[in-house]
Structure formats: structure tokens, C-alpha cells
Length: 492
Ligand SMILES: *[C@@H]1O[C@H](CO)[C@@H](O)[C@H](O)[C@H]1NC(C)=O
Ligand SMILES: *[C@@H]1O[C@H](CO)[C@@H](O)[C@H](O)[C@H]1NC(C)=O
Ligand SMILES: *[C@@H]1O[C@H](CO)[C@@H](O)[C@H](O)[C@H]1NC(C)=O
Image (tube, rainbow, N blue to C red; front, side, top):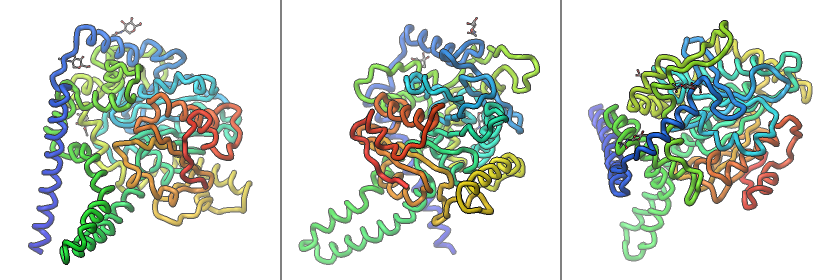
């Protein structure tokens, strides 16, 4: 009893110690690289104001062909999104979910890809709760999944014409946290979309599985180490072998250091958010564009990351007066605009509050939202295959966490935040029929941002979701036309 109590204490202490160590390490890095002391010039400040106005001023178009919209959730909080369409059509619908520390504006480079411009589909780029122009939540647990379910259903009702509900498909595209959420929805609310297109973040069931395997790793490492202790001279090779066995685990823990930082008490997290004039976020964007890119505009990135400022919160949309979704940002957006520390605390809430891993018991409202789509999915599947009484039996459920909708994964292999051995290998066991994983060997974490990988992503989206989309036998072959050394990892 007492010993388990002390073990628990020890666990907590080592967790925080590791977090604080990382915190110091990151700050040290900012100081060493000089980022910490860098001051913005007047020119930079002007550019920042211009970028904020362009992206977030509600009375104008954020990008040519796009407009601002709001959707008011049942809990009265508002989600902000931008779209190229005003209302229903018979075209496909694509909902884009961004990640940390981004917003809908992260997709701005992808939006301008020729393949995306000629898409002829309805595109909805939403700000996740607590990001960009969407309201803050009190917590970022499964309430985020509830909100997204409600939102996607509302978008299907708004944008897909009821005359042809079967001929238009819905797609969910996710990156980073948007990808984690996409995996969760593909497991627990798969009827929301006909296909998920996800990139560069873990399926949490897979990681849980990998970390259950950490005991196996630790065991085999310690066995080898014991052998070494037994007769050091003869078994010198064993020591390096034991270190090698652990390497993937140690490497991932080191790279995930920032997650430990985000789990420290508020003071540490908020300070990390603004230290050295936002060195953390700036560093993330330096990685995003890749070396030698001439597309990175620091002030645009900061404006995309931190959302509307106090000035933009005064603007309003031009819309018809009986639009119940309102015309201005919610009050919590202004609170974040006034305090970047609060904004950073909200963005990092996803790492603390369990939206990635907490079991999701759906509310009655969410069940009611999903019901008609579940019916529709089971109806169309029973037409094309043997009658099945429940739609989800479409895919066998061999492992906990299997994805029940067709899923395509595009993975930048040089991802520093999510390393391949822990976050990707083994994903095949969770995929259902008509799914595929393609690896981009030269690309990193920011698939939708870096030039080469986003061309691959735009190609994939246009082939699946364009107006004249036809079934694609092997997507990796199509990707290879624009990214020659792309590699097929799994196809089901
Ligand atoms: C810090 O960064 C912001 C956003 O890029 C900028 O507006 C501000 O002027 C910077 N402050 C200093 C002191 O450089
Ligand atoms: C927003 O844009 C409108 C139209 O271009 C402009 O008149 C207005 O000054 C802008 N508002 C703010 C707060 O910048
Ligand atoms: C999010 O930000 C709001 C301000 O908009 C703040 O009141 C709230 O405590 C924050 N919540 C979380 C979970 O970070």
C-alpha cells in the first residue's frame, strides 16, 4: 500500500521533472539560436497587422473566392469557418480540420494549388474550438468530438442538396490534431464521412498499443543488459544492442518533450507560448516550410496561428438579418485576442484534457445527429453487398480502434513530432477495406504546407473528391506522378 503510494508519487515527480527539464531545454535552445532576443521591426509589425486584417477581417474575403461563416453549436458557442460556397449543391463536400498551433488559415497554400482551384467541390475550412475565430471551450475533452459531429452534420445539411443526397460524398481531411480527431471519428462516428484523408498524426489506439509494447521493449533490453553484466567482456556487443532496442522509444520520448511541457502547470505553459516573442510558434513554422523555402512569411504565420486581433473582433460579416449564426466573433475570441498567453493555454488544452484518448460516450443529441447517416450508410451498403443489419458490420472489428470508414493516409516520413516506429508502423492492422497509406520520404510533419507534399495532397483530394471523381485503384501510383519516390506502405 505504502509502496504503491510512493511509487505513484515518484511517477508524478519524474513526470514533472522531465517536463521542466524539457522546458529549460527549449528555452535554452531559443536563447542559443538567438530567436529569444529577436525584435520585430516596424516593417514586421505593419506586415502582421496587414496579415491579420486579410485573414480575419469579417467584412472582406480572406482569400479570393472564399467567405467567412459561423455555425452556432447547441452549447451556444460559435465555430468560425471559411468556405467557397453559400448554399446547397450536388457537389461533394470536404471538411478540413487543422492542427496545433494552426487555424483554418494553415490551409491557405493548399487552397491555391491548381488541383484545388479546379476541384468544383464545396470546401469548408473550420477553426477547431479554441483556435482562430472559434470560441474557447472550458475543456478540450470529448466535447470537441461532440462539437465536430454536430458541425459536420450541419454542413452536410447546409451544403448537400436534399434532391441528390446519395450522389454527393462527404470527405474529412485532417492534419496533426485534425488527423487525431479524424481517426477518432473514423472509429466512433464513421458514417459522418464517406472517406477520411489524414496526414501526420497518430491514431491513438495504435500508440497505446505501441506503448503497451514498450514493456516488451524494456524487457528485452533489460535481458540483454543482464547478459552483459554477467560477463561484461564477452558481451560488450550486448550493451549497444540493448541501447539500440530502446532507441525508437527514447527518440520518440525526446521528440515528444513538448507534450510534457504542455502538461506542466499553467505558468510554464503560458510562458512557453510567449517566451522570446513567440519563439516556440516561430520555430514550428520554420520547420513547416522546409529549408530554403521562399514562401515562409513569418508575420502571416503568426496571424494564422493567433487568430483575429482586437481590431478584427470589431468587424462583422455582411449577411441577411435572420441568420441565427450571427455575424461577429464570439466574446471568448476577443478574450484570447487580448491575451496570447490565454490563447496558447487554450490551444494546448488538447494535449491535457483528453480529446485524443478519453472514451467517448456519445450524448443523445450526437446519436440523433448520426442516426440518419448511419441508416443511409447501411442502406447503400446493403444494396451493394450482402444484407447487413448494422452498418458498422461493413468492416470486421478485429482490433479495438479499427477504422470503420475508408481511410487514406499520406505521411511525411521526416516527421520529427511523430516518428514512424511509434506513430505509423502497424497502422495497417486498424484499416478497413478500400484504405491505403502512402509515404513521402522527403517530407516532414507539415504535409499541407511544404510545397512538394502539398502538391501530393492536392492531387489526392482532387482525385477522390473532384466533381468527376472516379474510383482510384491505387492512389500511391497517382501520387508518384507528382512525387516520384512516394512509397506504398499498405493497401487494403
Ligand atoms: C512580437 O511578435 C509579434 C507578432 O509577430 C509582433 O507584432 C510584435 O511586434 C513582436 N514584439 C517585439 C518586441 O518584437
Ligand atoms: C475591415 O475591412 C473593411 C473593408 O475593407 C475596412 O473598411 C475596415 O476598416 C476593416 N476593419 C478593421 C477593423 O480593420
Ligand atoms: C480558454 O480561453 C478563455 C478565454 O477565451 C479562458 O477564459 C479559458 O479559461 C481558457 N480555457 C482553457 C481550457 O484553456
